[in-house]
Image (cartoon, rainbow, N blue to C red; front, side):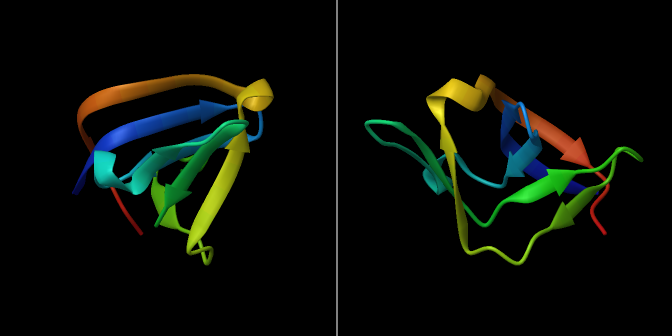
Length: 72
């Protein structure tokens, strides 16, 4: 199990970030560094992108806290 501090809920999928420092708010959306995607089997997978950009129009919610998720 890995620990994460941020969950980005978006129209295209949900992403986990290990630290709040990996999230940057920009004028038209948020930039996330070292993202993990949550798959249908409820596991977190590291994706090959160094960072992703999520426009505010597709961002549904940002949740902060301590989240444990199985990471593969």
